[in-house]
Amino acid sequence: MDKWTQNFPELGQAYELKVQFFDIYDINETELTNDANKFYQSWLSNIRKELMTYFEDLIKTTLYPITQFYYELVSYY
Image (tube, rainbow, N blue to C red; front, side, top):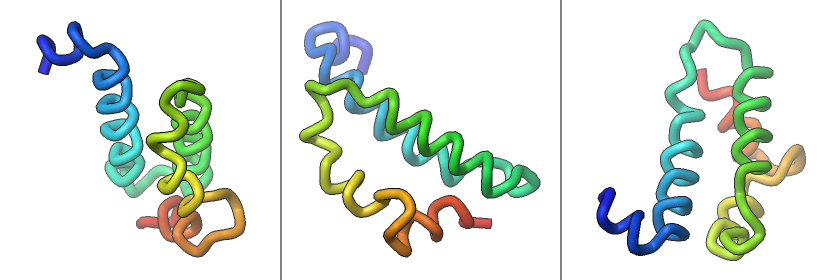
């Protein structure tokens, strides 16, 4: 993976964003829903403009606060 990310930095950044998104589900269950919300908002702010198009569908699905999926995501536990 290191070779790929060295040769294709945007691919590496997109991969890291994917990993960070799934990390939301790994938040310790003793942490509050508010922490998941903060983590999600932080994840959104890490998406560079050039990569935004690749994450549009996911962002639309999890758009705060109007979708049910958003509440399921931040209330996973």
